[in-house]
Length: 348
Image (cartoon, rainbow, N blue to C red; front, side, top):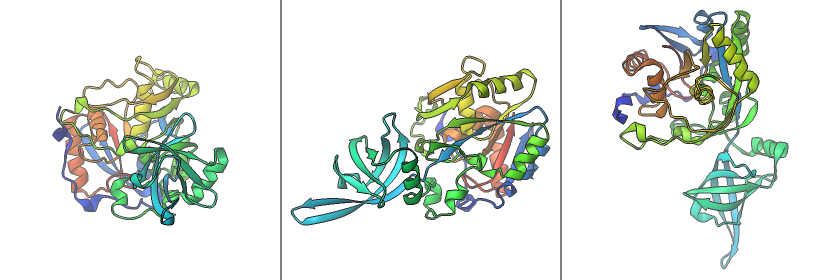
C-alpha cells in the first residue's frame, strides 16, 4: 500500500481560508451507496434516521500561538530576542511541549514574556522542541492565554493569511468544553444551534467524547509504504456513560455516526475488543484500508489533504476506488477543502 495511492490533484483555489456563514450553510457531499448527492449541511436531517446517534468531540481549542520576548543581560548590555511559540500538548506535570522559533536564541532557564500577566520558562529542549513551564495555572492560565494567544490555524491556512480575532470564534465548536486541543475537530464547525435542535427533535441522540487534537495531525507521511507510518499520540476519553449509550444504540439497530475523524478514531480506540468500552488515555491508532471498524456506521468529515493519514482513514471506511470518485466529484464541483471547507457524509 503506497503513499501515492492516496494522492490527488487539488487546485489551491479550493482551499478555504474562511468558513461558511452561517455555519450550517456549508455544502455537504453525501455518498450513500454508489450515489453521490450535492446538499447543504443544514440538510443533514434528510439523511439521518430516528434512533441514530451522533458522536461529537467536545475538546476546546486553546489559542496556542504566542509571540513573546526573551531578555538577556550580557557583554553588550540588555538585549532582547523575539520568540514565537506554538504550544503542542500539555505534559502530565503541567508543563507544555512547544515549538519555539528561533529555538537557538533561547537557553534553558531563560524566560519568555508574552504579556504583563503571562510568561514561561524554558525547562528543556528535545528533538527540536522545547518544554515550557508557565507562571500561571488553572483558570488564571486560561484567562491570560486567551488574551495573549492567537488560534493555531492549520499551516495550509496560515500560509495564505494570518490568524485574527474572528478565528477565536470560527475555529471553535459551539459545544467546546474541555480545553487542550491545538487543532479543531473541524467537521463539527458546521453545526449551529438551530441544526442541533432539529437533529434532536427528529429523534437522533447525541453523545460527547473528548479527544485533544494535537499538532501532529498536520504532520506529513514520510514513508512510501504507509503501513510503516507511526502515528502521533493524542489524549482522549470515552466515559462509562458515553460507552453505554453508544452500545445501546448499536444494540437497538441504530447507526453510530461520529462527526469528524477525531471522534471516529477515539471510539474505535475504545472498541478494539470488538465492542465499545469506557476508555481513557493516549491513542495512536492508525486507520488505513483493511482496518476492522467495530463502532462507526458512517462518518461526517471535511475534505482532507492528499497523501494524509485522514485520506487513508476515509479510504478504509468507504473504499479506495469509491473515495477517489468522491474526491474527483468534489474537485469538479468546486467544494471547499480542509479545515474551513465544506463537509461530506460518508455512508459505507
